[in-house]
Image (cartoon, rainbow, N blue to C red; front, side, top):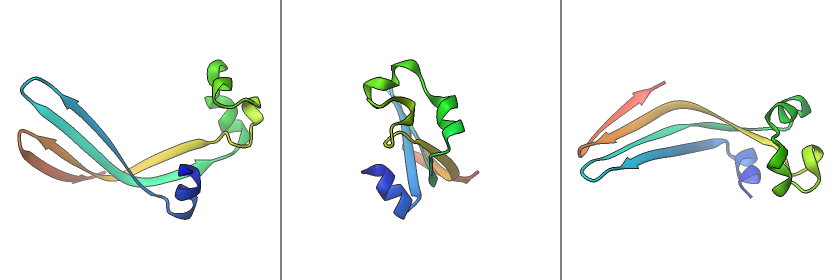
Length: 86
């Protein structure tokens, strides 16, 4: 489902956060997601246990690599935010 979405619209964001007892810190990265299907790249990324998700192995037509490239972001900490470019 996501691969189909990224192929039609590569815009994407990724959010990381850490919630401590007294402090919440987060960063959102915004950029583009590429769907990579080159067999050489797939071979390099493949791990032995991946057959749990891809029953046909490394040549499973559903197996691909998602490559995210960030262009900007937003940082949050102590009720303050800051935007930045990459």
